[in-house]
Length: 376
Ligand code: GTP
Image (cartoon, rainbow, N blue to C red; front, top):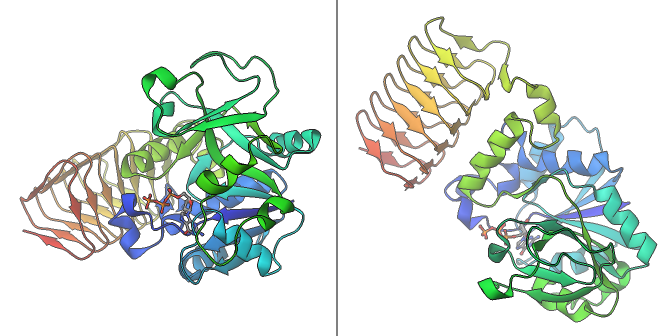
């Protein structure tokens, strides 16, 4: 079975992190995000993957090469202009990369949903297209999918396994919420559907292709399990804790282990510092005397946490320097950030690659600092 992963979005909500590297190449816990997707696909015996890149494919090639060439065969298709979510499928087909049936995934999913069950359900019904449906506690922010046999209301169980899609409801009003099932950004398509996509122009699969397929062999199949669309800094942090705490089945969670704590070889933690799980400290991290790291922290390779500094509920990527007595709370620091002595980085802040925060400066809640910027 073959899969195509949509990885060409701009990732605007993840700026400034995505100003220096595309969202799929961002580090999440101990590996680039796209590797979680490839590992998820490999667990479901997908042997051939096409990455649909809107921009240059080089950053992705680079991070996937680090996987050592194991796993599925990976090929890349680059769009001359962003083609939205359906256009890249048609382009890949026109370039001769696709077979008769295709699994498609949004490239920002962290999930362990049973893709094999989705493919089986598609085959058993002889469907033209089958969408993975996932129950959501807050369906209003995603859009609902109404189907035959669906749940009678939020939180209720599906009546049956039927699943002919009846209607899509975008941004439903509270009164319209009669199901909790949303489209999970994973679907199986027959080649006939891909051939119906107009060529050489941006086309949205959600808005232009799926609504046209209602009544023409479009099914939805409910899958329970972990599902997160890692599209915002808040969700990126939550996804990090979910991996460390083992709430999603991934190779990274297995590596961190049940205690939720991994201090890699070569990391040096002063005996007078504290590290509270869940936490990951990668190679060559140094934590000074009196510092407190965690609960909930990822500290990337070679980063230094100064004496009596405090880092909690935060991701500090590689090669950062956190000065003595500085504090970082619920924030994301891209690689190479410097935080001066006694500086404070407050909840929701996202700091771009190589930025510098001078001693004693406070970065306010939710602030963004661009790559290389200096806060003084
Ligand atoms: P935001 O800019 O923050 O909304 O993020 P995004 O660009 O990733 O958009 P969104 O989350 O809506 O995209 C859903 C999926 O489709 C993501 O995996 C994107 O990478 C992908 N995608 C969106 N637009 C394109 C495109 O023009 N080409 C390709 N190849 N993929 C796209």
